[in-house]
Length: 181
Image 1 (cartoon, rainbow, N blue to C red):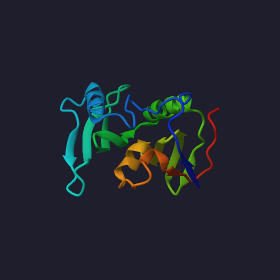
Image 2 (image 1 turned 180 degrees about the vertical axis):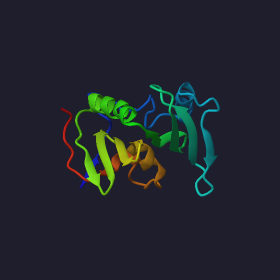
Image 3 (image 1 turned 90 degrees about the horizontal axis):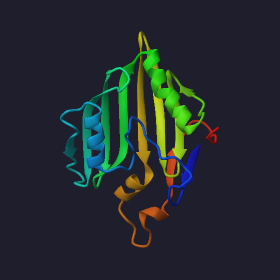
Image 4 (image 1 turned 180 degrees about the horizontal axis):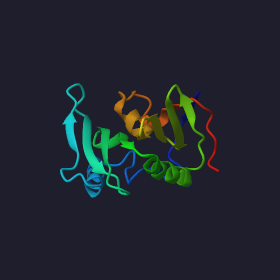
C-alpha cells in the first residue's frame, strides 16, 4: 500500500520528532541537538563523491533516560536532514521509553510484523516516523527513522515545468494507516 500526499504540512498536525531530532531540520540544528544528547564531537559528516549536495553523518549519543549508547545516522541534502535514524540495543523497559511517547504524541499505530521484525509508523503531512524492532536474547534491537519528503524530493533533478512542492511524496507501508486516536 502507498500513501501519496501533496502540499505543505498542515498547521493542525504536530511535527514529528524523536529525542528532539526532526526530519527537515538544518544540519547545524541537528548537530546542536546531537551535542545536547552527549555527542561531544557532534556529527561526523562525509560529503558524497557522487553528489556534493549530500552528506552522510554519524554520531553516538546517550539515551536521555538511562545513558545507553545510541547510534545516530543521517542523510542531509543541501544541509537539511532528509533521513535521521537513531538505533540501539535496548532492554524491554528502555524500548517502552521509546514506544510509549511515540504513541502518546502521534496516536495508536498498531504494530505490524514481517518475519522477525516489527514496525509501527506515523505519517504527518509529507513526513514519516517509523519505529522498528526485533527481539534478540536479552535485548531488543530497535531503531526510529524520521523521513522528510520535501527534502528528499529536492534531491531529485528538478523538472523545468514542476517544482519539488508540486510532486507527490510517497511512503510505503505494510498495513493500512489509521488516523490518530
